[in-house]
Length: 243
Image (cartoon, rainbow, N blue to C red; front, side, top):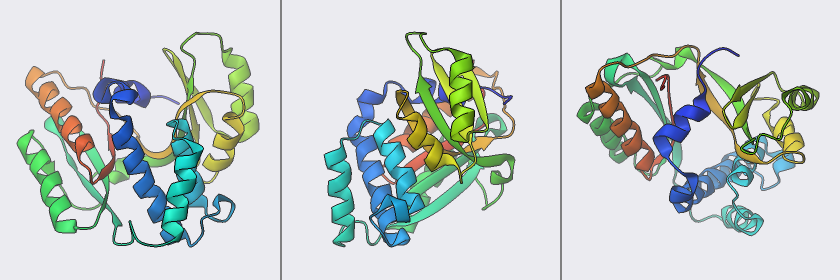
Protein backbone atom coordinates (compact mmCIF):
# COMPACT_ATOMS: atom_id res chain seq x y z
CA UNK A 1 0.00 0.00 0.00
CA UNK A 2 1.38 3.37 -0.98
CA UNK A 3 1.19 6.42 1.21
CA UNK A 4 2.75 7.65 4.39
CA UNK A 5 2.47 5.65 7.57
CA UNK A 6 -0.60 6.54 9.63
CA UNK A 7 0.97 4.96 12.73
CA UNK A 8 3.91 7.33 12.43
CA UNK A 9 1.45 10.23 12.35
CA UNK A 10 -0.33 8.93 15.45
CA UNK A 11 2.95 8.57 17.33
CA UNK A 12 3.90 12.14 16.51
CA UNK A 13 0.58 13.71 17.45
CA UNK A 14 -0.56 11.61 20.38
CA UNK A 15 2.70 10.93 22.17
CA UNK A 16 3.19 7.96 24.46
CA UNK A 17 0.08 5.81 24.85
CA UNK A 18 0.58 5.40 28.58
CA UNK A 19 0.12 9.13 29.16
CA UNK A 20 -3.50 8.92 28.07
CA UNK A 21 -4.36 5.39 29.08
CA UNK A 22 -7.18 6.30 31.48
CA UNK A 23 -8.80 8.58 28.91
CA UNK A 24 -8.40 5.92 26.22
CA UNK A 25 -10.07 3.27 28.38
CA UNK A 26 -12.97 5.63 29.09
CA UNK A 27 -13.50 6.25 25.38
CA UNK A 28 -13.27 2.56 24.53
CA UNK A 29 -15.75 1.75 27.29
CA UNK A 30 -18.22 4.27 25.89
CA UNK A 31 -17.79 2.80 22.42
CA UNK A 32 -18.35 -0.68 23.84
CA UNK A 33 -21.58 0.35 25.57
CA UNK A 34 -22.93 1.83 22.34
CA UNK A 35 -21.92 -1.31 20.44
CA UNK A 36 -23.86 -3.49 22.88
CA UNK A 37 -26.88 -1.21 22.73
CA UNK A 38 -27.00 -0.90 18.94
CA UNK A 39 -25.93 -4.49 18.26
CA UNK A 40 -28.48 -5.90 20.69
CA UNK A 41 -26.04 -8.41 22.18
CA UNK A 42 -23.15 -8.64 24.63
CA UNK A 43 -21.74 -11.64 22.77
CA UNK A 44 -19.06 -10.61 20.24
CA UNK A 45 -19.83 -13.73 18.22
CA UNK A 46 -23.26 -12.27 17.52
CA UNK A 47 -22.29 -8.60 17.47
CA UNK A 48 -19.58 -7.72 14.94
CA UNK A 49 -19.34 -4.12 16.11
CA UNK A 50 -18.72 -5.24 19.68
CA UNK A 51 -16.12 -7.72 18.44
CA UNK A 52 -14.29 -4.86 16.72
CA UNK A 53 -14.32 -2.74 19.88
CA UNK A 54 -13.06 -5.66 21.98
CA UNK A 55 -10.17 -6.14 19.53
CA UNK A 56 -9.37 -2.45 19.96
CA UNK A 57 -9.58 -2.77 23.75
CA UNK A 58 -7.26 -5.76 23.87
CA UNK A 59 -4.70 -4.05 21.65
CA UNK A 60 -4.79 -1.12 24.09
CA UNK A 61 -4.11 -3.55 26.95
CA UNK A 62 -7.49 -3.00 28.56
CA UNK A 63 -7.84 -5.78 31.18
CA UNK A 64 -10.33 -8.56 30.46
CA UNK A 65 -12.10 -7.83 33.77
CA UNK A 66 -12.68 -4.25 32.64
CA UNK A 67 -14.06 -5.41 29.32
CA UNK A 68 -16.46 -7.83 31.01
CA UNK A 69 -17.53 -5.18 33.52
CA UNK A 70 -18.35 -2.69 30.77
CA UNK A 71 -20.35 -5.25 28.77
CA UNK A 72 -22.29 -6.31 31.89
CA UNK A 73 -22.98 -2.65 32.64
CA UNK A 74 -24.21 -2.09 29.09
CA UNK A 75 -26.49 -5.13 29.26
CA UNK A 76 -27.95 -3.77 32.46
CA UNK A 77 -28.85 -0.47 30.82
CA UNK A 78 -28.02 2.84 32.43
CA UNK A 79 -24.80 4.56 31.40
CA UNK A 80 -24.40 5.21 27.72
CA UNK A 81 -28.05 4.82 26.79
CA UNK A 82 -28.35 8.46 25.77
CA UNK A 83 -25.15 8.57 23.73
CA UNK A 84 -25.15 8.64 19.95
CA UNK A 85 -22.46 8.51 17.28
CA UNK A 86 -21.86 11.62 15.20
CA UNK A 87 -19.21 12.48 12.61
CA UNK A 88 -17.86 15.92 11.69
CA UNK A 89 -15.76 16.79 8.66
CA UNK A 90 -13.68 19.79 7.76
CA UNK A 91 -10.33 21.23 6.79
CA UNK A 92 -7.32 22.07 8.88
CA UNK A 93 -4.53 24.52 8.03
CA UNK A 94 -3.27 24.23 4.45
CA UNK A 95 -6.33 22.31 3.33
CA UNK A 96 -5.62 19.16 5.39
CA UNK A 97 -8.73 16.94 5.41
CA UNK A 98 -9.97 16.08 8.91
CA UNK A 99 -12.66 13.64 10.07
CA UNK A 100 -13.79 13.70 13.70
CA UNK A 101 -15.80 10.79 15.11
CA UNK A 102 -17.57 11.53 18.38
CA UNK A 103 -20.00 9.97 20.82
CA UNK A 104 -22.15 12.48 22.64
CA UNK A 105 -25.24 12.97 24.76
CA UNK A 106 -25.47 16.60 23.60
CA UNK A 107 -25.01 17.26 19.87
CA UNK A 108 -25.04 21.04 20.29
CA UNK A 109 -22.25 21.00 22.86
CA UNK A 110 -20.05 18.67 20.81
CA UNK A 111 -20.63 20.45 17.50
CA UNK A 112 -19.81 23.78 19.12
CA UNK A 113 -16.60 22.45 20.64
CA UNK A 114 -15.43 20.81 17.40
CA UNK A 115 -16.22 23.95 15.38
CA UNK A 116 -14.34 26.06 17.92
CA UNK A 117 -11.19 23.96 17.50
CA UNK A 118 -11.41 24.14 13.71
CA UNK A 119 -11.84 27.92 13.78
CA UNK A 120 -9.20 28.61 16.41
CA UNK A 121 -6.43 26.74 14.62
CA UNK A 122 -6.83 27.93 11.06
CA UNK A 123 -9.36 25.46 9.72
CA UNK A 124 -13.07 25.29 9.16
CA UNK A 125 -15.79 22.71 9.75
CA UNK A 126 -17.55 21.65 6.57
CA UNK A 127 -20.63 19.72 5.59
CA UNK A 128 -21.13 15.96 5.75
CA UNK A 129 -19.21 14.31 2.91
CA UNK A 130 -16.91 17.24 2.19
CA UNK A 131 -13.75 15.19 2.87
CA UNK A 132 -14.85 11.63 3.64
CA UNK A 133 -15.00 10.83 -0.09
CA UNK A 134 -11.18 10.91 -0.07
CA UNK A 135 -10.87 8.32 2.72
CA UNK A 136 -11.51 4.55 2.74
CA UNK A 137 -12.78 2.60 5.73
CA UNK A 138 -10.24 -0.15 6.49
CA UNK A 139 -9.22 -2.41 9.31
CA UNK A 140 -5.79 -1.30 10.60
CA UNK A 141 -3.73 -3.54 12.87
CA UNK A 142 -0.34 -2.47 14.22
CA UNK A 143 2.14 -5.23 15.09
CA UNK A 144 5.00 -4.37 17.44
CA UNK A 145 8.49 -5.01 16.05
CA UNK A 146 10.50 -2.69 18.28
CA UNK A 147 13.18 -5.30 18.88
CA UNK A 148 13.46 -6.01 15.14
CA UNK A 149 13.14 -9.77 15.58
CA UNK A 150 10.17 -10.32 13.30
CA UNK A 151 10.80 -11.49 9.75
CA UNK A 152 8.81 -9.51 7.18
CA UNK A 153 8.24 -12.49 4.88
CA UNK A 154 6.89 -14.56 7.77
CA UNK A 155 4.60 -11.76 8.91
CA UNK A 156 3.39 -11.31 5.34
CA UNK A 157 2.49 -15.00 5.05
CA UNK A 158 0.69 -14.91 8.39
CA UNK A 159 -1.37 -11.83 7.59
CA UNK A 160 -2.38 -13.13 4.16
CA UNK A 161 -3.33 -16.50 5.64
CA UNK A 162 -5.47 -14.65 8.20
CA UNK A 163 -7.29 -12.80 5.40
CA UNK A 164 -5.58 -9.39 5.38
CA UNK A 165 -5.00 -7.36 2.22
CA UNK A 166 -1.66 -5.66 2.66
CA UNK A 167 1.35 -5.07 4.91
CA UNK A 168 3.44 -1.92 5.35
CA UNK A 169 6.74 -1.87 7.23
CA UNK A 170 7.47 1.35 9.07
CA UNK A 171 10.32 1.75 11.53
CA UNK A 172 9.51 -0.47 14.53
CA UNK A 173 6.06 -1.68 13.49
CA UNK A 174 4.18 -3.60 10.82
CA UNK A 175 0.92 -2.06 9.63
CA UNK A 176 -1.67 -4.58 8.51
CA UNK A 177 -4.62 -3.49 6.37
CA UNK A 178 -7.88 -5.41 5.94
CA UNK A 179 -11.39 -4.89 4.68
CA UNK A 180 -13.82 -3.91 7.46
CA UNK A 181 -15.56 -7.26 6.98
CA UNK A 182 -12.36 -9.27 7.53
CA UNK A 183 -11.03 -7.15 10.38
CA UNK A 184 -12.36 -9.16 13.34
CA UNK A 185 -11.09 -12.51 12.05
CA UNK A 186 -7.69 -11.11 11.11
CA UNK A 187 -7.25 -9.36 14.47
CA UNK A 188 -8.23 -12.53 16.35
CA UNK A 189 -5.72 -14.60 14.37
CA UNK A 190 -2.83 -12.17 14.70
CA UNK A 191 -3.24 -11.50 18.43
CA UNK A 192 -2.42 -15.19 18.99
CA UNK A 193 0.98 -14.75 17.34
CA UNK A 194 2.03 -11.14 17.79
CA UNK A 195 1.92 -8.21 20.18
CA UNK A 196 -0.62 -5.76 18.80
CA UNK A 197 -0.18 -2.06 19.54
CA UNK A 198 -3.45 -1.04 17.93
CA UNK A 199 -6.38 -2.75 16.22
CA UNK A 200 -9.43 -0.91 14.91
CA UNK A 201 -11.31 0.07 11.80
CA UNK A 202 -10.22 3.49 10.64
CA UNK A 203 -10.68 6.04 7.89
CA UNK A 204 -7.51 5.80 5.80
CA UNK A 205 -6.74 8.71 3.43
CA UNK A 206 -6.29 8.01 -0.28
CA UNK A 207 -3.61 10.70 -0.49
CA UNK A 208 -1.63 12.93 1.83
CA UNK A 209 -0.81 16.63 2.11
CA UNK A 210 2.48 18.10 3.29
CA UNK A 211 2.60 21.35 5.24
CA UNK A 212 5.62 23.63 4.78
CA UNK A 213 4.56 26.78 6.65
CA UNK A 214 5.78 26.53 10.29
CA UNK A 215 2.64 28.32 11.48
CA UNK A 216 0.41 25.83 9.66
CA UNK A 217 2.34 22.93 11.19
CA UNK A 218 2.04 24.41 14.69
CA UNK A 219 -1.70 25.02 14.26
CA UNK A 220 -2.30 21.54 12.85
CA UNK A 221 -0.54 19.97 15.83
CA UNK A 222 -2.65 22.07 18.21
CA UNK A 223 -5.85 21.24 16.32
CA UNK A 224 -5.23 17.49 16.60
CA UNK A 225 -4.13 17.76 20.23
CA UNK A 226 -7.27 19.60 21.32
CA UNK A 227 -9.61 17.41 19.26
CA UNK A 228 -8.16 14.23 20.74
CA UNK A 229 -8.28 15.64 24.27
CA UNK A 230 -12.03 16.21 24.00
CA UNK A 231 -14.05 13.78 26.11
CA UNK A 232 -16.66 13.49 23.35
CA UNK A 233 -14.21 12.75 20.53
CA UNK A 234 -13.47 9.07 19.87
CA UNK A 235 -11.24 9.25 16.79
CA UNK A 236 -9.60 11.88 14.61
CA UNK A 237 -8.43 11.04 11.08
CA UNK A 238 -6.51 13.30 8.71
CA UNK A 239 -4.32 13.28 5.61
CA UNK A 240 -1.41 15.34 6.93
CA UNK A 241 1.88 13.73 5.96
CA UNK A 242 4.40 14.36 8.68
CA UNK A 243 8.15 13.98 8.25
